[in-house]
Structure formats: structure tokens, C-alpha cells
Image (cartoon, rainbow, N blue to C red; front, top):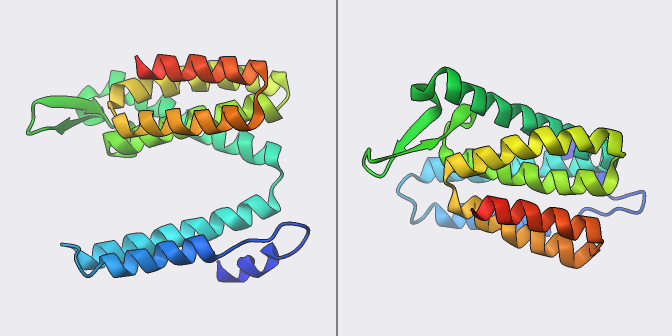
Length: 193
């Protein structure tokens, strides 16, 4: 994993290790006050590893292939979560708030994790509209968008909804095409309902 980071310093793209290094440092410092210090260290090292793998993948993969692959993978995860909801609702739902509320967790094991995956899928679908041919993004938006919106709603993850709203605003302000603005407004308004 660390060997691939060296190759990121070429071809016009330069990987800055400052942010992941700061995150790892923060993770290590937070072990001092964590009730589960080994879990905190493990989570920090794991996140740092995923960050490095992501940096290598972004360097070696075209934007189109990356957007399509992540969109399809997250669509499969959200579709499986919905299928599990209908097939085995007792396994798909997580009990929260002392057993008084049931939220969809699906194959992601926790409602907030499912919410994050659904919000990330919606963001990748916006990128798909921007970077893929219509023959590829139309089915992805119809199938993936529907499953992501359903999972976002059924997971009840308010943090994922807020993150989706903030990220969508950044994307719209950065790119500003009419189609993207309309798509983002529609996805955010439906997710907020």
C-alpha cells in the first residue's frame, strides 16, 4: 500500500500526504481520552489505509471508470439492502433509541452506514451525469437513484442527509450547468422529505 504512494508524484498529479497524516495524528492523540483506545487506533490506521488505497486507485483509474464502478457497487449494496428489507425485515432493521425506533441497516450493518453509502451513491450519480455517456448514466440514475433515496429515507440518517446537502451545494457552485443544478435540487429535495 505504501509503495503505491510514491507513484502519485508524477504525471501532473501530486498527492499531498498532509491531510491523511494529520488525520492519523489526530486519531493517535484521541486515543488518550477514548474509552476504547485500541479500537480508536485501529479505526485511524484503517481509515489511513483506505485513504492511501483511494489515492492510488484515483491515480491509476480513469474518471469515467471510477465513477461507473463506484456507482454500480453502491447501487448493488443499496438494492441488496432493500431486498433484505422485504425478504427478512427482522434482519434488515436495526433497533435504536432503546428499542423504540426501527431503522433500515440492510447489508451495511448500521443505519448511519447505510445512509452514508446512499448519500455517497447520490453524489456519484451526479458525477455520472456529468462524466458518463447517457446510455450509462440513465439506467444508473433510475435504478441507483431510486434505491439510494429509499435507503436514505429508511435509514433515517440525518447526518448523511446533511452531508449530501452540503456536498451537493459545493458541486453545484463549482460546475453550475442547468442539468446538474436541476438534478441536484431534485435529489436533495426528495432526500429532505
